[in-house]
Length: 232
Ligand code: C5P
Image 1 (cartoon, rainbow, N blue to C red):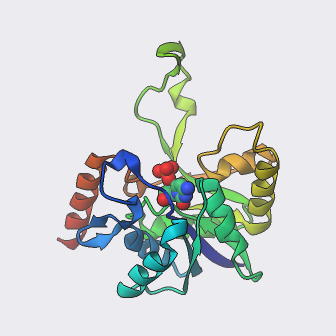
Image 2 (tube, rainbow, N blue to C red):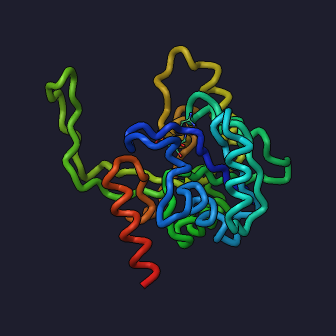
């Protein structure tokens, strides 16, 4: 199976505060997107990386990646209005020989190569959909208008990360089904959610604390600290 990585990087990243698209913000002087692309490209399983850039920033992102040393076969396509749209466009651009796809958020720059390898290995082992998952440490409540309506049993909950790995045929089918029912279904926040809706089993592998998503200002501090520890 030949595996490509798709990196959606077209989000605005407003929760991170002012300062432009999140993927282009820097961590230790290197754009978050460059860290993320290097991280997936470090896996020997990944032969091609396709980045979905903000639609008005394709040439900017392409030149940024060219300016940094990224040891990967790389293309940049225009993303869309939603994450789902960005992933769909990037997958559509893959050459037909790529029958396995890893979808990795640009906003998870520090994913360890061992996790990328584990997801790729599960795909090669026959899984149609595989995602990294970690136990939830906070108690999670369901609320309605600020009032708690339920407390799901924490023991049965996990928080999920990327890269999420899929057989390409399954991923394309899931995205096509979601596009057809876009007016009735809530927006999915990950690709596995779309795959679940078409009745395909999604397997989990143990996630990594370092694969966290850079979302809020404190996450930048945390990420810088991890990079400093890796350099030490
Ligand atoms: O918004 P969220 O943090 O869930 O975004 C996850 C990833 O999806 C980020 O890497 C972001 O750049 C990407 N994204 C995208 N296109 C959008 C919205 C988000 O590629 N329209």
